[in-house]
Length: 217
Image 1 (spheres, rainbow, N blue to C red):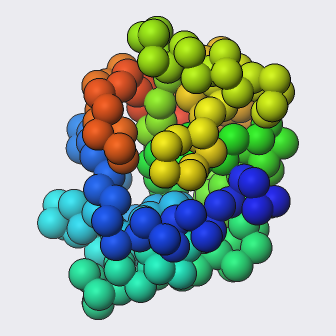
Image 2: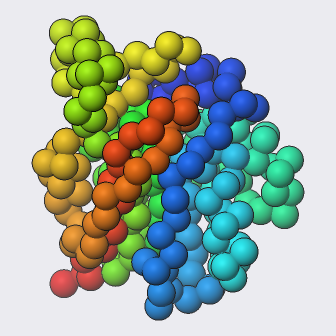
């Protein structure tokens, strides 16, 4: 993944100050064993892992590209397992390692088409057949502020929905059609539209998608 698509220096610089708010929809974990191996890919400072632990899940792993985010996560949750992703989207985990993978507000931080496809392929590799992939991300917004910046940056980045934030990140908002195509190798289980505050405090429309890796034939 290129620097453009991982932006490690940005995330290291803001690791101590950002707050993430995408909600965890716990009914989607009904029927998943407390022993299930769960990976939070792009775990940030471990917020989602903490909530899962409080709900009785204990085989939890977090991974992130930002060493400073992982440092913050380890300070907050010293008993949890965290790893730095040195060559994203590649992860250090063997094939079929996890029963569930969470991808919360990660695609918005990976603006390139090819990089997103490579990330989803990697998650497919490390998921067990029948395992779930739970995606939470941001949709294209229809307010004037967002439409204006989509238009401003579409020529530079070649994709409508990619934009630069005021503090230096390159982010992406997605159409439902793009996300559906991105996840085409997975079986759709459920989806929900949410309202969420972005990391810079703007109320936005998001989507959560629950998919399942097909069982081997």
